[in-house]
Image (cartoon, rainbow, N blue to C red; front, top):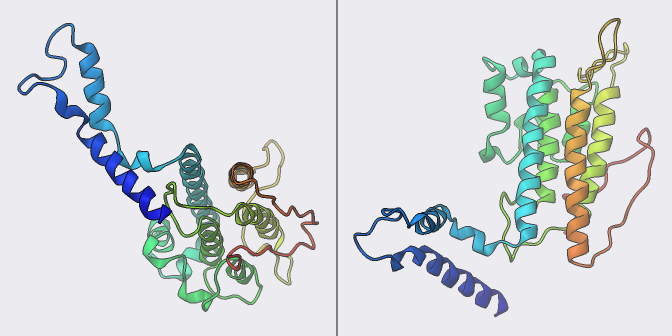
Length: 257
């Protein structure tokens, strides 16, 4: 009952917002006279106002921003990994990095790839870094990461008053990204060669290239801030975990309900 009432109020307010500008006399354009600068600014504000914003709290807007930044970093990491490991996108028979990215990041796939054999989330990340995996390692790694993050955001791309996020899922995702970044930088085959190239160590006259690490850091920071904000808002407690990266296991995200 309360949910239906809330939805009704939102629809009523949205209708009011769309009719705010109808009070101006017909035939009188906004700002037509020298003294009408106030009317003009009000008209511009109304014309650019998105009624959807009425249905959002400040926390919803913050969640929108953090999600957008996190998935922007996912795309950056995907492109960087493909460019450093061109053999991976070629495994899929793609004509270019851009074509491989279009396939990998297509929202219609739901972060599912045929070559992962149905594995998703952290299971797909682990599969990508197995020595015997013959498929597109970058695709499997990014798809696994994307599916995990998507689950942490309850499969939503935008948030409103009636939506709820679980701060534990967001926190666990941040810790899982720390583990994934470590595994990416250290996973090697039997001969000692890295399975995927990412960060470059410092060489003579050249500083270390830590751009991958920075993108992971941005995502982890966004998740930690958002999880703390939502926990404080809902007076909830996050079960925090301290573990060694070398022996760490992935924390549940997709399995949490």
